[in-house]
Image (cartoon, rainbow, N blue to C red; front, top):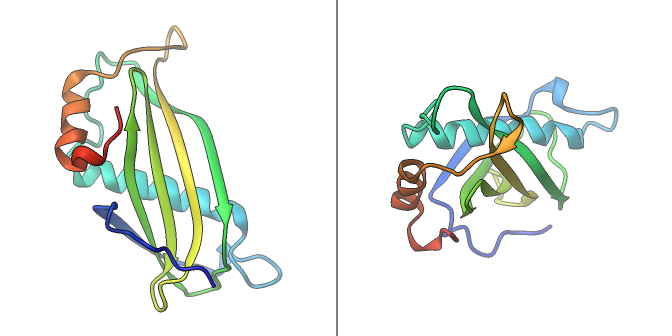
Length: 149
């Protein structure tokens, strides 16, 4: 089983318990169920920063998913407690990339790794727009020098 060598780069994590409906016929977490876990961890990360619903410009501008990459390392099963580690790894002019790891709490086994890239868009125009400096500075204040710009 694979263990993450260094989680010190993560300053935030969120726990989720595997429900029966999260498992497939083999009794392991269905691969697609990790996506809601990751989305929820991202929401909790922003909530913890006081940035959930934070203005990113005028109303009608939101972050939307642009790219997602997931790698599966080991299975989780019903009732496992999973810790999802999340950090913003990069913030660009119009996009932000998160790095995530999910591990089983009881033994620390690395289950899944992922990256998510979101783009700030004007919903009416469906075009990318610059991320406001206030948003960028709030993330940098938390992530520090590890944040790639």
